[in-house]
Length: 109
Image 1 (cartoon, helix red, strand yellow):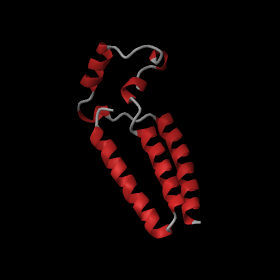
Image 2: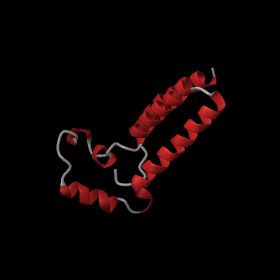
Image 3: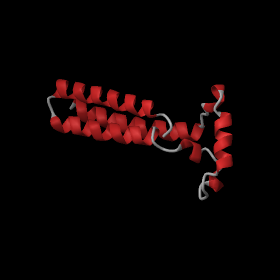
Image 4: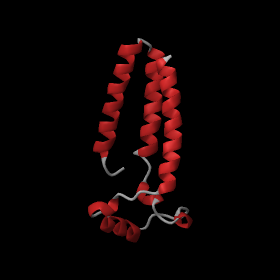
């Protein structure tokens, strides 16, 4: 992961959410579930090497070469570095939406 600041801020916000869940529910079990759900969510979004997976699918079995790394650095200027893939957005929205729904029904019960 190239930007550790994003990971640190996500973990700090997760800690804030865990404290709020603990204050409002007085349940250690709900705090642990919130921690586990939050860490899985952070790991699924921030930790993968997106530069590796942004390549063509047929190239995933091969190493990430220096030439590809240089091409990625050249592409990272301006708004071009924020590429949105519709299938990835749909999958993440479905999975995390369902997860948030289940988490909320557990916490609010």
